[in-house]
Length: 529
Image (cartoon, rainbow, N blue to C red; front, top):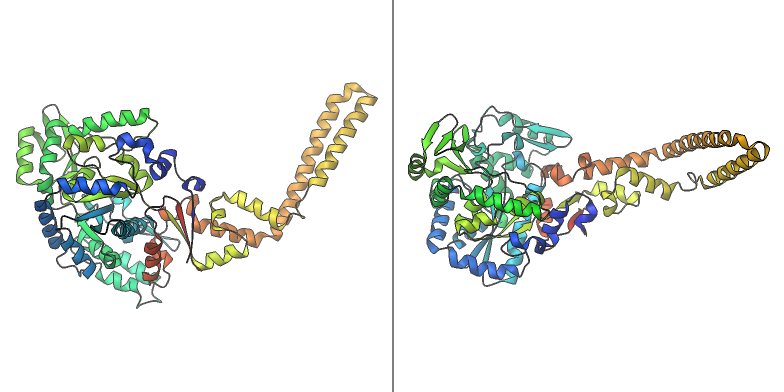
């Protein structure tokens, strides 16, 4: 495996705010506990240790053991769950929607990042333990964002009419997806992927998805947590009540957002007066503040004391939205740092005041690694065309131009033609003026006409030369499309299993984890040799 990096700014895919949050968080220091750095963990450890009680740790361990019941748990995961009871153990968290078959590649890159973070932190702070945690967004109800994935030029979609929190969806509609995957990998019936599909089972999607992710990354000790849990919700109950009574998150985010925009930042979250949902199977409806009442579509209108009493009786029937979910995470986990995508980290900038008003420690924030995977076949094609990985971030028309200049410079050199045209235009103008100065406009028009004719000739010759190199230019286009599908980042489109055409994914997964660089903000290029 050949590894190289490129500054994110050179890729052309990141905004200035995203670049600052990757390389220079000091720009937004007012919106953070502390700008991210390896050294910042030392202070964060001490602060979290002071506020995260042994009772919370014991409760967390018991909840995780219950959530993992019926899951074939790797020894590394079991050990990390037990370690969470220790006051010297802390987490590094990432999370994502439960995208079908892990969705785009960055799902895997997020998890690889926190795995390596935990490993590197252990080396820097050997007296502490660090557990990589994946937060399943099981309460999210945006089915359209999780239903499809792209694999081998095919879009595979989980078709279901179910609604509400996706984690509570039944698995009855999954068989067509499994059939399509089985067909794609039919020549590899004994592959790791087939074994993975065999464990992807359960009554609800949360159960099956946990098994899927655990089977993929459990050997690295990744602990998966589901926030859709009655015990954990009860721990969060005081903050849910506070939001209904005081609308504290709305007020905090609104004020912070104004300050952020004044500083040139962007708004990612639009807060609600109450940032909670009511949930049940098939339903996730907002709590809407209307005067002194709370409305829930399909349920009715309630006095605030009635809602508070309801929450006390059944906290699991309420769910934080994007404005409160991060707070929920930090209340129930001994977490030090949240690792997210470039856009995702931006919305965390709106949230520190929410944590301050709730008197909860705000975590360190880090932008996850971004990567592009260049398979062996593509790497060989690039080598034949004398292309470096960094070249592929250029626009296709520029790559074509540079290729022709490098490989057909003699054939497309029109400099002599251009020089002679300038001489001809000058002589034409001088001769015309010497004979009849009134024909100056006519001479100028004829010069323009000759220029157009020459341009047509050059275009015809350029197309002829381009045709001679058509095979290489088509190869160049294919490489560009494979690495940057639809002129976007590969990691935001291509599914992980496309990197594993035999269905045996462990070697590729190991390479991704091994080469993740949690303390390097640059874009990583992984090239098979």
